[in-house]
Image: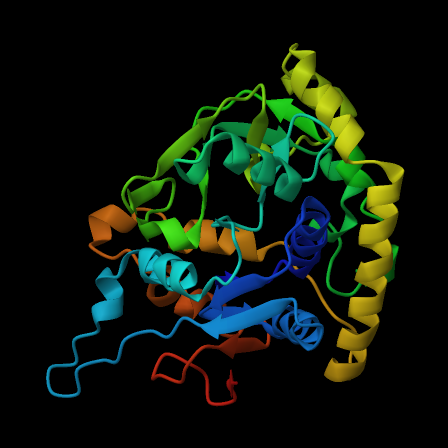
Length: 323
């Protein structure tokens, strides 16, 4: 995670994945807002989250060369495979906070994987095919309120009820069985142990949903226009994002954020404008010969909020929190 501030999304992700059957989360962070870090710590106390520092590499003191200029996305494949080695569970998905793997039946993901593993004794993991998912942005006050106006207690997570399938092609995501896998990549299992292999999961059984911010619909009318006519996806999303699910997410969110506010000694803030700043400072990264958002966006974001960094460096402000 770099320049990550979206703590409402983080809590939503953790709580939804807990309902799907997840029991342990490993988050690799390089630069996150104080609010995000405090959310980590609350879940860490519960034994659910393990925050791990994704430290940048040191600058050469003699030449001044900074290898982080050319380290693509802070070397995410390194951290993914570190997670593979740390995982103590039978199944280990590797996903971003805007991604979910949802079975098409009424099982949890864990129940689904257990059944598939019994059916396929040669499984080293399971590959899920991509589908986009959109929500109604009008129901997300944290995406439009200013820091001064934002009230974290008003978030009700009702936008989850508007989850809608959106046609968008992209690569899939995999769930590994760590005892049977040697190497993973972002979208697939790179190498399994013999005689195991990655088993493909068709959309008729389960779907990898990706809900990027730029796929959000502004309102209900726009959401309905972008919705695919195939009902198999949306009917399952409606049966998954129930009132009971939203109630559970909301109740746990309140408990977490009450403790976060106490720990911070101030009102937790959220500012959606960080996304547009990131987009701007990363524009044309290929032509600039740089590929690290940490380096490219430091000047634009260093004073944006109270950051928690993985490690101190000359790029960080004097009053950084290195924890």
